[in-house]
Amino acid sequence: MNAFDASIQTYLSHVAPSSGLFAHAVAVIAGFALFKGLAPLAIMWAIWFKRDESLEHRREMVVAIMSAALVAFVLGRLLALVLPFRLRPIDDASLHLTFSGASQASNPLRLWSSFPSDHAALWMAVAVGIFLVWRWIGVLAILHCVLFICLPRVYLGLHYPTDVIAGAVIGAAVVILLTRASLRQRFATRVVLFMERWPAVGYMLAFLYFFELATMFDEPRLLAVSLLKVL
Image (cartoon, rainbow, N blue to C red; front, side):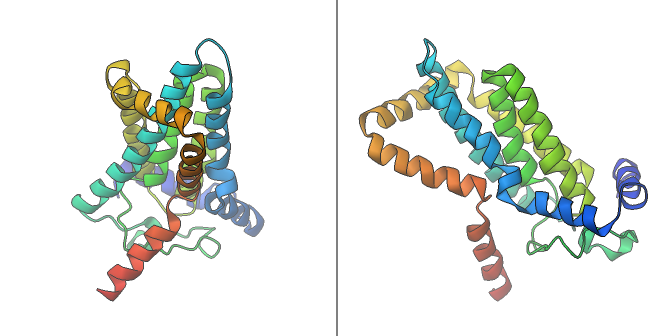
């Protein structure tokens, strides 16, 4: 653990509130989709349906942002696979740190490398994307990502600070890239046209996609972990 991570983890372990109630509250925030993805995704629906002269542009942005979220998530997982394995703080006894939320925060993904944080990558991509469309709401979305997604995972020992910082940088970089007009218009325009021509099919697929994003693909990931254990 580098000095930067050590200083923050030590502070959170010894100085931050450590009562059972507080730790349980943080674990709930970190584990429930209600506190993670639902609010940002609801904002994306508001951006999609708000009717004004920029409707087509905003719908293209929604498609690009949602695509960037998936790309950031997948990129984070790929990096975790190809980079040297990093054990999560909660599972590393050599750190000699006690995490107050350890008993409340189940960690079924011990086989996944800690670096980078796919949570931070995905939700920072969405938050920065909202900022690119609606500035003041985007600021709130970024703060939400930091306070309700990134910090709880560090407090509970699920990630090091550099894990979530790297994930957030990945998410921000991917969404900024994919929302550029020269790249966005190559694919987002076609998706918007598809949604307008076949709304029944389009919104059905959108619902399924948003559901998987909100739950962070938990069931497919748990299935993958189970298969790894068997193999």
